[in-house]
Image (cartoon, rainbow, N blue to C red; front, top):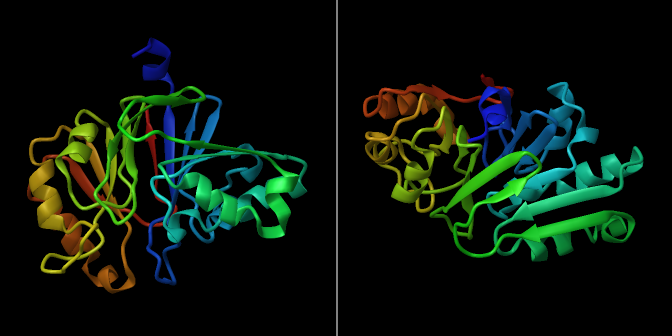
Length: 254
């Protein structure tokens, strides 16, 4: 890795840590990554544009969104963010994501004829796990196990964001050596959760993975009372610090 990437701080802010179901405390999924001159939004669920303002992050600097997958709770605010930028004189907007991203963008950006008013670029990643770049970020990926095609992403070898997924060896291996892993843990043990994670299943796969800090996210409202229990269970299997993330959780990777 180039020396300048190692020494440049990377700041992660989790804007939304909830699910598709409404919660009084957690918005739908979105995280913003600030590194050098780059500001990259990973997923853009409902309310994320306003959460940027609450986090004192200038939405006008967010011209690129990377999608882990295309479920509505990860893409709903794409036209909201793009239109806000357009109304403020910024007509460029880029969306990068897994197969299916183009079709979703065709539908979403038909609203208010945004596709005709924006300089919109949609980059649909080819199937597979080839690395790619966005600005000054080198990005590796692994396929997730969910009900739609999707990817977990690792940024400059330091930060891994898993998106929605059942626990899988490829995703955990992608995170090996990361400083921070953001991984969903949607339900308590004993819950049938196809395409999502429970703490013991996740903890077992993370047992031999070298990560400093694991942030658990994507809680459904009925899971909220079990938040501490989920984090404690995962921590039984790993030496990493395990925390249950909330909206506005922010970490700086020095």
